[in-house]
Length: 264
Image 1 (cartoon, rainbow, N blue to C red):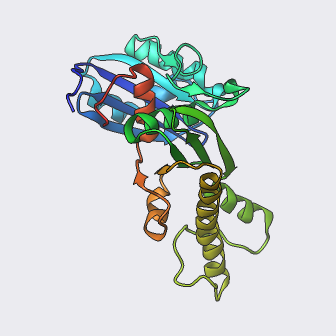
Image 2 (cartoon, one colour; image 1 turned 180 degrees about the vertical axis):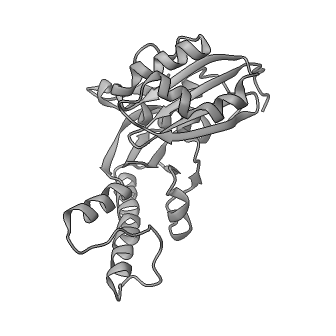
């Protein structure tokens, strides 16, 4: 494939409910990332303080655009203020002054989160149409792009960490555990029983939901998974075709320029 000439460096920012990821993109793709906790009341000055290490590495770069995907509207004002003041750039916010070039076949397209739209755009652009995107984030989401390249809806369920938080906070005697695959399905103590419930429970959710989606569609559907836990589940299931941990960041960049093929 002939690559489009792309001589600029852009910054893409993915504001999630738990973490915010800053990344730089140029003709070689994503080449630098920085992750921090999403805090609603963080000020523009605090962004600069927390990003000192990141900023020190990019001071000599000419960043031409900043594009933000945010599912936490309360952070947008201070984040925009930081970007405008430090980089002298007015950032583009998905859903505000820039929109993914993706047909949304829903009655209320405005209800779909920016992260789900950019994930679907990237999946369709990079892996082809008729695809399911599974994002293991604060929520575990399933989004579907049909054979015509249209977003047709999805599923939202509590994320793995959210479920673990609920167990920890709502029970008096269940401890906080690490997420890992247990040796046996049937736990022989509290820890292994909880690990089995989380690991095999979510693997069952993954496989069950994907199977039902495919049963409603007579087309061959591929599955791409993203999010930090995608690699944990992939070796133990046949339903995931691709893992792409940077899918959301790629989708934000593609929203800025749909014709980019540096991720293909």
